[in-house]
Image (cartoon, rainbow, N blue to C red; front, side, top):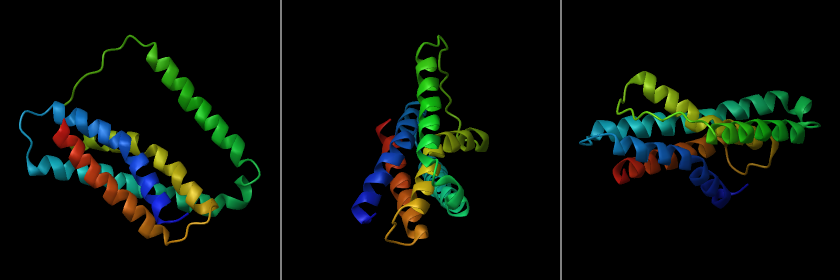
Length: 154
């Protein structure tokens, strides 16, 4: 996996954080620099942390999961897709939260970066042509920047 592929992965991973940042931007009357830093650091930090954790897990369990990795991916995607379909029929009304508190940001950062964990496992099982710390740093920086742009757009 080369640099261009990594950039495309980073942009793809940051899209959910971008969308949440747009919504956070809509919920705030006046944006300040602390809002940009909070969104960027939380989302960018977790988007970098999750692939690193996934890489460590994938490296540790590589010999055990290689034979069934396609079934694991199938089940995970099936569960995620099923949950999305179930939520589409839900009558719940989403609440808008303008808080930038630790609890709110932590939950949103985890929710938007959980898919990056799978990318980290992929890094461990594929031919990554750069150090993993550089790769997760690039992912974190791209997410940091795009989250700030999303906040401004909102």
